[in-house]
Length: 200
Length: 166
Image (tube, rainbow over all chains, first blue to last red; front, side, top):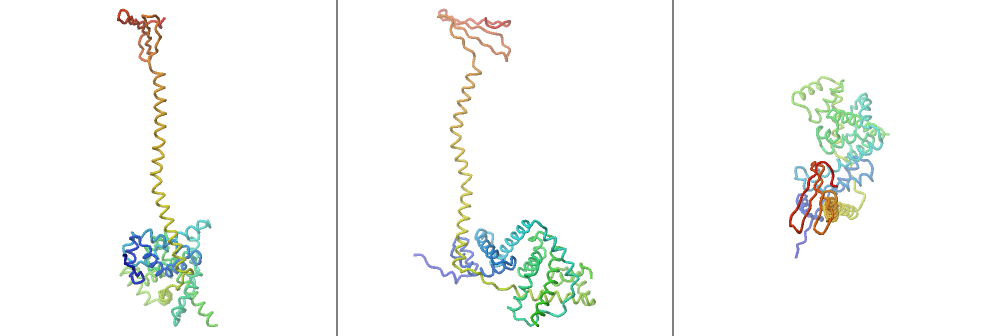
């Protein structure tokens, strides 16, 4: 008689090992544990519920297919979010090609505006509760261009270095630096604006 | 302030500077009010972002979401199996075709050899005589007449380099 396994009691590493042995129930448990995080990351990139759902579903399928490439250098969740980001980047590139215009170039050119902006001297997020702060940041992120937002998501949420971001975004380290800079300056301004709005 | 200097201030916050460059930028921030203000603004923004991204719940039930993933995995595995089987099927198809094509080719070859290369045979002239004309113009051999005298149990070959067999 086969012994029944309580998958909810297993660590991620044990579930990964079982999944590598084609145990679909173990993989289902991993999906259940991390599906919200993967979806949230896909949403941060795409800013669209339907696309975020599609990307997170595709990421889980890819994750299953590439499990043998996961050797545990990072956590399983980090590995999965990397797959998600790569899929989102592919979709963003595809959409750009369809729009048949160089938005990436346009985004970089727009940096001049951010450079001229006045420095926000007070901290617009000081004293905010964590959830409130996250909501404000989310609202501000929505107003960034795709290229600037992607740079922020990869650097701040995925904790990737300039070099790694450049590789994934297929651009130079200098471009990554300027995208991050313009994005942060714009975010500072947007957060200050959101604070002022709330004060009225 | 130059863009390069601004980017260096940012790189300092991100921990992407060499020790020498880091000391240089720190010195600038300590002495330049604009550099200090920019450093403060960037640090505040980075600090806020480090609180993490907005938490979101996947807008589908666990069962429904998993069923879609499981279906897609199954489908992709079927597709992969089919793709792997394809070259084998193609080879089997070629093998099936090989036999009739080979047989037909052999027939054509045999027919061609028989009708183009063999010596021209002239039917026997009489009861005890047969005549064969061996003409091979490529080798420039003279025309030849071969007489088989059955009753004498002998063969006579007449070569004529001047004219045809007549």
